[in-house]
Amino acid sequence: MLRKILIFFILFSFKSLLAEEYFLTLRNDKVNLRQGPSFEYPIKLFYKKKFLPVLVQEKFENFRKIRDHENNTGWIHVSQLSKKKAAIVIDGEAYIFSSNTIFSKPLAISKNGKLLLVKKCKKDWCKISSKNIKGWIKKESLWGLY
Image (cartoon, rainbow, N blue to C red; front, side, top):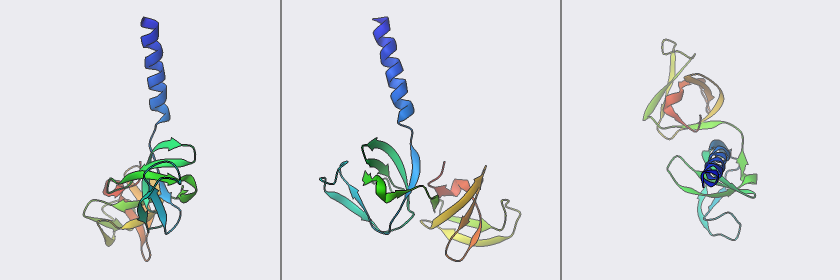
């Protein structure tokens, strides 16, 4: 009996390690979110924002179960996902600075929901770019990064 419990515990722990969540972004301007992991399942909604970050929660063959910043969940084919880093401002308004300190020059204020491309991150700060601005933003203001 103890042996069965031990085997169950090991298998459960191993499954937990494999089920690690990670962020990816949408590869295209139009991506279908499906109700299940196959093209046979109906489309739940369309994403129309390239580089939108999504949290991958599960894998099934060539499909990934994702969750977005608005807590929508569903399945996306792996060909529609990219490893490019991006994040969304979730903290109301967030300041973008010229360097990675609050004592540097503020360059802009980014509004809630703004999509930013992420170049690199250092501890609490990320170097970002948008259409017409490049700078540093506090990591705590962003959704789409670990």
